[in-house]
Amino acid sequence: MLEVKKADYIGGYSLELLFNNGVKKVVDLGPYLQGKIFEPLKDYEYFKKYRINFNTIEWENGADFAPEFLITV
Image: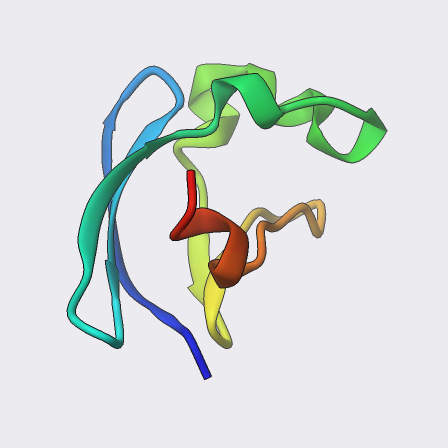
């Protein structure tokens, strides 16, 4: 099962992610912040308040992205 093991804020809507398969990549999530659940993430300060929960990144409002999606961005 693919998992996000580490996430570092880069700037804007970009994070550097390290996956459990050894892949490390920078993802820009800006284009994917659409819909009601992702609206609060458009605020950079809120976006920076992510955490790793279970196997992926998540925000306190419950917004998240599947690791299988993140590795393809």
